[in-house]
Amino acid sequence: MNNYAPEYTKKERIAIIVKFLLLALPIHAVAQLWFFDWLREYADNANCYYYGNITGVHLLMYSMFIGLPLLPAIMLFIFEGRRSLKIIKLGKSPLPGEKVFKKTMYTYGYKAKIQPVFVFLFIGLCITSSLWGAIKAHKLTQDVKPCEQQPTHENI
Figure 1: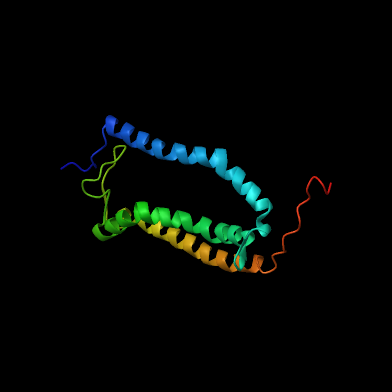
Figure 2: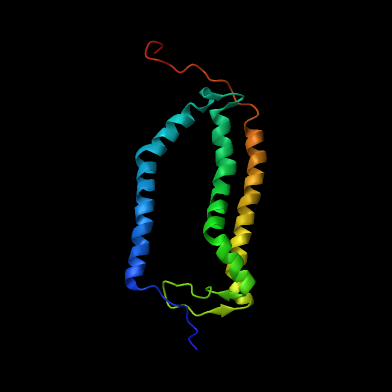
């Protein structure tokens, strides 16, 4: 009996890496060339942007304290949640028929369940951090100062 999970071929590994790069590189380029500059400029004048009863400061604070911790939890659940649940249910890792990048021996029982349990613990930690962030963001945005007129060339 072969006690090792099937491995990806070299061609399959290269294809997976190329697909990842084709997705990641444009996101990275947009972030570096446009998003971070826009965010810096927006943050400098965030209290001047009004969206009904909230300001840009509210958007930034809530995004930072709720969105940033919640994003990895959502991503991890999307990409690893179902797999981790199956491993916990079956007690076998890697899953039957699942290919791996390097020679990997099957593990069974509680040893197979350790990684999925940590996945869900991390998701829980991120969600807890988001809940704490909601309280913190609310406290920080209670006294948002109104927008002061930015100096123009005529005022200088």
